[in-house]
Amino acid sequence: MIYVIKITITAIKVKCPGQPGHGSQFLTNTAGEKLYKVIDSFLSYRDEQEHLLKENKNLCLGDVNTVNLTMLEGGVQYNVVPAELNVGFDIRVSPTQDLTKFEEKITSLCKSAGEDVTYEFVVNKLPQASEGQNQVTCVEDGKNPWWDAFSQACKHQSTFLLSASPPSTEHQSFSMITMNSSTRKYSYEASRSTRPLSVPLLT
Image 1: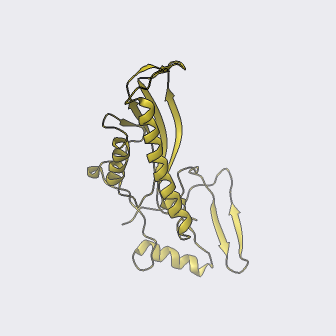
Image 2 (image 1 turned 120 degrees about the horizontal axis):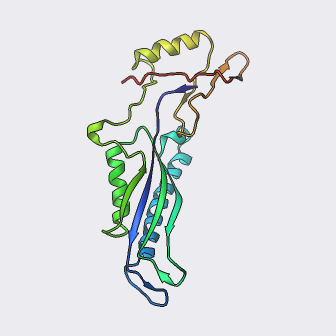
Image 3 (image 1 turned 90 degrees about the horizontal axis):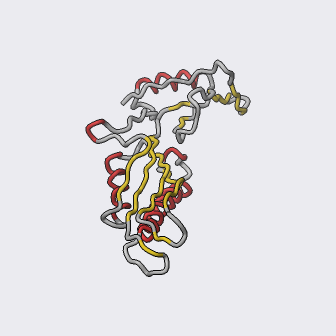
């Protein structure tokens, strides 16, 4: 298994301010209404990405963006409409995703719930265009001299290669997996001293 790309991990807190008041009233422009719209927008986007993954058998989890609601904050007491409600999302961004455009997507989803709805990064702010985008190691034959040399050597050893784009949940010391073409069985090489297979990010 060859680690060829790295997923961008981030998390955001979306802040939904609104008109506070007593729970017995039909208040307008409340934080709850905005929170509902934010959650609906983000989870609809989540459904779109999940659909892409399920419909294309050539894709793996690292090829799409994952969004999950992980935190909710707010409230004073049960009969009081709060002045603000917050929601947190864990987000894993595919290496092939333009990060600038993805942040524009986040902004758009928030603003659709109200102009005063804002967000902040609580884990790993996305890089700006000036800071560079994700780099992906090309693993197509004939397009990357490093990959050509490596893959040919593996073919001579009858080793089956799997390119991986893990969803950033793995430990750095994951084991190398090989499959011998003659036995068609996976062999696992794992120990405390297992070191990660380092693949340079070549363009």
